[in-house]
Length: 261
Image (cartoon, rainbow, N blue to C red):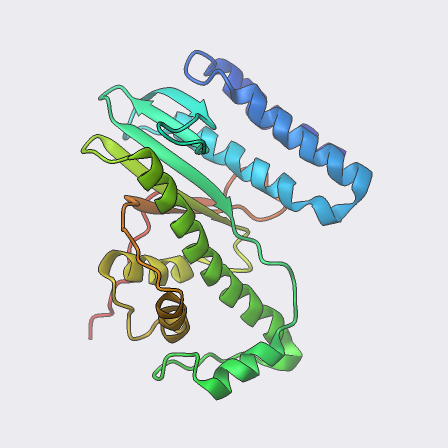
């Protein structure tokens, strides 16, 4: 753990220091990461989720500073939002005047064997009619199912949270970009799962091959949920547990491409 903390500091501290004229709060991010490490050392690995969350925020901050499409002249960490008591993870201001608001969420479902839920979902028709989800109980099927199902639920949960922030703070306008960055370890869930959710979010209609379409529509209907569709784009970041930097970062995840026959 200590060696991991040192490696993260060695990788990002010089980078944040070099960009201190644009990002004056870089040390706060690193301090939060170090505090999370200390909590794990004192109280056990059950508190490790905070380490992952801080680490992923550091990676996103680094990527924003290195962005070449939009030259960000100022990056702020957890700035207060106008007309709201809430904050957002990052506000990045470009030299063109465009402002990007970025909320970062780590989706890493706890390991849990929910084979019972998969059996129930199959019997009760939670899964789309023309989709076959094939997992085997003896090959971690219950854990794989739980990771997929829980990750999809978090996508909707975090989307609704960010939409509420947008509404409260009135973060709209031609020069405003709102991004929900969802981080994965690349094992529990992958980008294709987010692509299916993005397809539903953008169009209001689920794809026919979206395994979770029926379950999600039932939940949205039962809870009387209305999506405002005020999030400009969704980002996917993959950082395996052992890696210091992300293995992949797609700032604008699109719906799946239909195959050509």
